[in-house]
Length: 122
Image 1 (cartoon, rainbow, N blue to C red):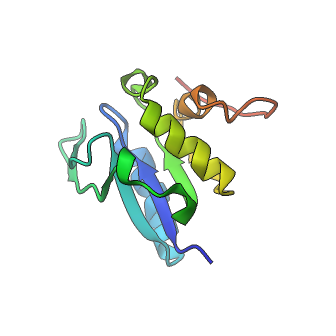
Image 2 (cartoon, rainbow, N blue to C red):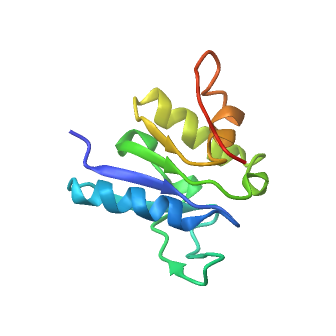
Image 3 (cartoon, one colour):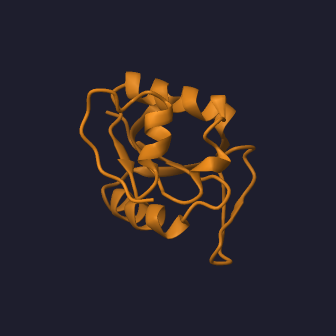
């Protein structure tokens, strides 16, 4: 059984949306990994710095039970092909997604919402 969850951070994302989901998942004994575009720690708009565990390129999507994608300025990574590959591969590996607010726009860009019903706020 997979024992890890992946949280995707990107410039100007809303970190508190992902933090609450990560806290719930951690309470279910899942290890939380945090990926950022280059693997650098994330300095959020709240002023809180969060430690990254991976760059997008270093993520092995088949290791994750679930993937969390917060909202925010998704335009910052809409054209990031490495992130799109990670999302597609996680989907192919059977991971469900928790995409919050504008986060589903990234799933749509990766082609994961075709034929599916979803909601989002942006």
